[in-house]
Amino acid sequence: MAVDSVPAQRLARRPLRASATIELVSLAVLLVNLATVDVREIAALFGPVHGVAWLFGVLATRRDPRAGTEATLRAVIPGIGGLLALRALERDDARAAPVTGSEAR
Image (cartoon, rainbow, N blue to C red; front, side, top):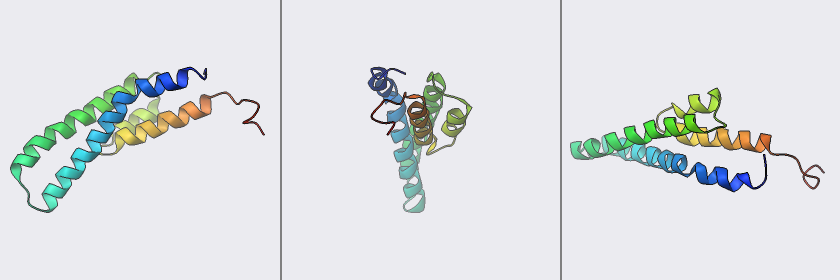
C-alpha cells in the first residue's frame, strides 16, 4: 500500500465513522431513556435513527475494499459494531503497510 493512499482511505471511511458514532450515541440515548423517564417519543425518534445508522455501518463496512469476514461480522454487532469494524479495518491497514527503513529498527 502506498503512503499516499492512507489519507484517501481515511477519507473514504468518513461515512463509516459518522454512522458508527451516530449508532453508539443513539443507543446510549435509547438506554438512558429506557432507564429513566421512558418517553415514547424519544424512543420513536431515536429507534429508527439507531437502526438506519447500524444498517448503513454494516453496508459501508461491506463496501470497503479491505473488509474481510472479521470486519463484517464485527459490524453486525448492534451498538458498537461500527466502531469495532473500524478498528479491525485500521488494524488490517497497519499490517498491510510496508515497513520503511526507519521503522524496521
